[in-house]
Image (cartoon, rainbow, N blue to C red; front, side, top):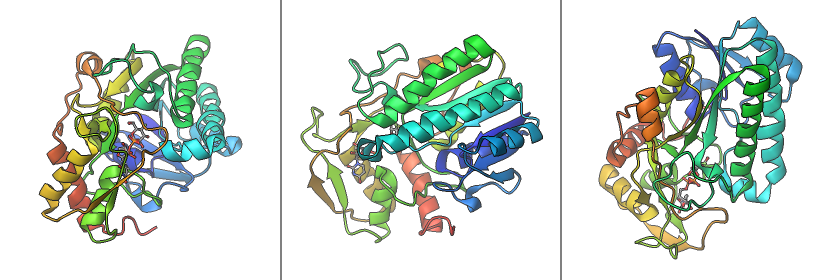
Length: 323
Ligand code: UFG
């Protein structure tokens, strides 16, 4: 199968590309490298350096690659940044994403796989969270992804472009070769590991007065390779609609720090800070729909294994990718 992967030089995209290639697919990566890294693109993949906003280039790249499926990872994905610069999120995640959808329709692509997020739900009425919960995002990032989800439904109905959208919980961990390197790192696990590597003096805990047992936010961490496997399962014709991807276990910020101390064997100093705007207190998935419909079977459900693979990668690449 020929798969066109936007954002294939980014964290989640790069590891999905690796797994697609391992599964025998032909892959073309389309990425503007603002967030991604050229050296994060598996050597077996074709690479086109381009922006989603450059519609002629995008159309040419899709037509040229005889694409059967598109996987769309290219997006801005920082909750905090979206609270200060919402325009960036609506422009890049929605408006530029539309160019991709139109190019996919024009090229008669059969399947569209979308990287969505549990941030589309906002603070949930109940956890674990099923796909039928109301979607009431509390930040522009979640709103932008929800808008794109809705557009996908219309494109499927009107243009017959079958889609599957995965609402990720907190992607974490690494493969042997590829891992998490954001130029500006805001995510919990890589930042905690930077403290363990001696690159930061301490980890900041954003909010200790949440209505959770230890007062810090709870998240459901899901291994990046398990995410990738769900995407591959979603390529099958007829697999469509919305799926949560998470393990169903919630860990608080303090628990994550403690696990990182255990895995690294290093003391990780922490300081308590005020809440970060836009953070829901508790996000935990019910992924039964993916287990049942896609026969999705996560191989690394334990936080210990997730952190261990991340730590192995960060030790091998203490400064991330060279580019
Ligand atoms: N946190 C800290 N200190 C840090 C970094 C994070 O206390 O240095 C806290 C955050 O406040 C939050 C938790 O750790 O409570 C997790 O934060 P991350 O930034 O790692 O992840 P988020 O939950 O904010 O967001 C991530 C992705 C989003 C996705 C979301 C779904 O970045 O794209 O998970 O939960 F939508």
